[in-house]
Image (cartoon, rainbow, N blue to C red; front, side, top):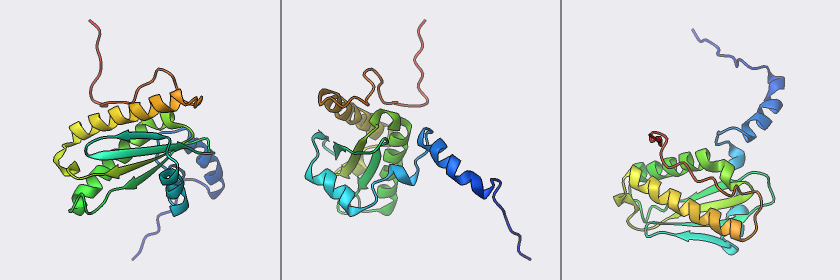
Length: 163
């Protein structure tokens, strides 16, 4: 006895949902660097770089109205798949939350040796600092789609209070 699960949305609404996702906080396929040519463009000409002891961020302006993220998390640096997946998940989540800051930029995050020694909180803090460096360089370069004052979200659970 098999049951068929049908979609709640009519098929005609798929086109309108694509434009809705462009402004939401989703991490759709359009926000990913998928083809080797796209990766190669960033590797060949990355005017914005932020280097950290455990990872490197390369970025360049794209011709699109949205940012794209590529990940190069090497097995050489993180032997266990569970470790590689954890860092990919953390990077994607952080990028997804801060994607509005990176309009029109292609970003690649590369792992380096020792990354497995960072816990989630320390890694997220370091990643946010490197995002700031990339955004600062993009603003200095005259990329006008970048907000001037906004900073990446450091931690969703921490709220500032003024008393």
